[in-house]
Amino acid sequence: MSPLKVIFLADTRPGHYHLAQGVIAALERLRPVEVTRIEVKRKWIVPTRWLRRRIAAKSFYPPRMLRMAYRIDADTIPKADLVISAGGETHMPNLCVTRLLGVPNIFCGSLLRGLGPENFSLIISSYDRDSGSDRHLVVLKPSSIDPEALGRPAVVPRYGLENHPKVAGLLVGGNAGAFKYKRQEWERLVSFLTEVSKAWGTRWLVSTSRRTPDAVADRFAELAKDESVIARFIDFRTAGPGTLPEIFASAEVIVCTEDSSTMISEAVSARLPVVGVAPAAHRFTDEEAEYRSFLMRNGWCRVLPIAELSPDALAKALSETEPLQENPLDALAAKLKQRLPELFS
Image (cartoon, rainbow, N blue to C red; front, side, top):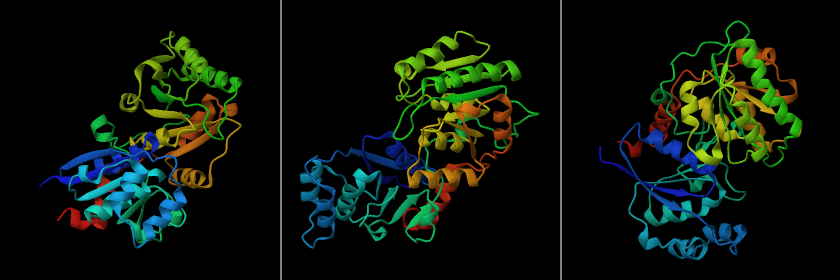
């Protein structure tokens, strides 16, 4: 088939544009895709309420809106078959480009108040409340990670008290929003790795992130000198982004700090048993709480307070997880073909 030409409108937040990249990866399972990526940065002087009003106005003119609000020249936008975006800042440019080109569009995430689903051909959501809408598709948050390309097994053994993983991954985040880690909680997480290694003979693959405090990264770097505990330490400060697939390919289970929905979702997409660890001071938004319940209800992950971490507690949590059996990219591709058949005929 000829390539599906996609306009990908991306904001600056990885947690958003990774969702759109996951949808694009699923589309590639069905036909070749040719992507034009356009960065979205709204002028700070343009209020959201004004943008919403202009979208519904009879005088709405997409080229003017793109130029005034986003410094995007409509003449530079190539012809395309589909528009994709994720994140609130991309709502309006998505609609502008869609109306400019007269093509279907996909949005990943939640709609702004006052913006109806009829403005989009398909909305990718991870919230059960949207399951009754004919414009929504409720799925695990999309990820471009392909478990088969990573070499992940199709059937994952059940780990627990009688079957300990030989290699475990730890994904370390940091303070974010209502998530606040105390120094003693970081110390507890560091000592927990040593306890598991001594009790089970498990070795760890550890990766920090952009949110990880320097002092915490330094503590894991120090522990990494003991190769009986940490087999591989990836320091975000020097390695940068994009290193998680290396851990997903080799780890048998994943432990992840609860502040990062993206890291947890990607680990689930890689068909790994996932256990989140949470500080005492944390709170989810209503939407995020709903998504975490969705993950827990499907048995894809479990959560432990950092204060209660122990080898036995981890074993029990792992015994209650049931990783994905299907390839999430194939599953999403099948749903996209069903919902937007005109793109694949």
